[in-house]
Length: 438
Image 1 (spheres, rainbow, N blue to C red):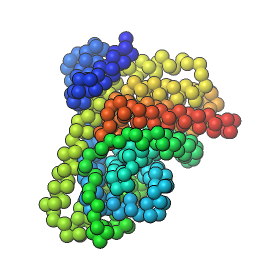
Image 2: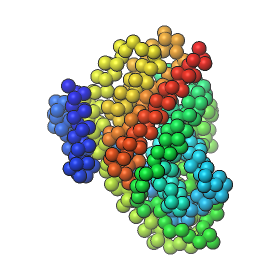
Image 3: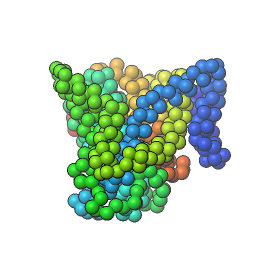
Image 4: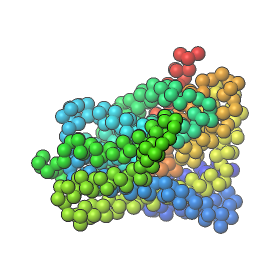
């Protein structure tokens, strides 16, 4: 019965948003309430769960997305994004520009959470699309594919890192194998799949697009890069200090503190205000108007993500993830395929790659020692499954849809398909590595 309720809820959500043209946030709340009631939850518990889900997702994302929008707006209005894209075209040529962006995204995605790296790359994607008349989905989806792969496969991202510990895997080997699997996954789900996406001509919001400035008014290339990727530098430094420095001291503690994503984003916005604004003699009033405009444009995105958080919490409270896991636990299949399948089903049901990976870990961990399967490959198989077919209960789905201004149908045909390709190619790569290792 819970699976029928889940399926009916997802179908109703799609109908409300597409056919009834209801605001997505309102649609999420309605469906969350109905699904909770259908599962027998008392109304007070439904309200508590929705508040917890909304608070949980906004608590973790609001600072990141708001600061990211501010930084992106300052980078766009100052001409920093224009300068970076001009130099990229000069260095790689327009023919290889997509590959250059994918490589940049992969490097950026290694130390950063998906949401942080996404909002950092959006200004460059939109600027390139506007300046060189390239469909935004054609260049944006491969970039996002690289970010998604690093998020699902590779430590130090939350789920892979936790899986390494629970499976008693080796962090270094998991990262090495993960890169080997990630490269073909990114190439196939990114640039190769993108050749079919030129017809998707969404017009993204104007927050990150600005008029071309004369060359003399542009900031230097070095400062443009530094201002844009300062969060990457701060967070990556903190990650290295946490993961690879055995004895902590006052210096490492300082870098860990300033490398916390919210702190890093605040520092980066302040640096951009000074180096791209005040130092260029731009009035504070003008800079603050840019900040205000950036927040207006992402308010709707925050509400949609809040709604998704409410529905995800209702599903978690009803225990549907454990019910799905229980049904799949006794599958008599190869352990790698079992890990991938359990993770994939939970991902489709709940929308969260992290929850899917961690739930699967509790089921799979006890069988690793007796199965003889390489625990590093089990981490990757679980991570690959956790990325499959993100749809309306996936926060990344709505980020991609709203930032690139796509319809629900087109987001399913682009984002959801890309995530599925990433997942399936990852599983194939894991089995190929398993064949070589055994």
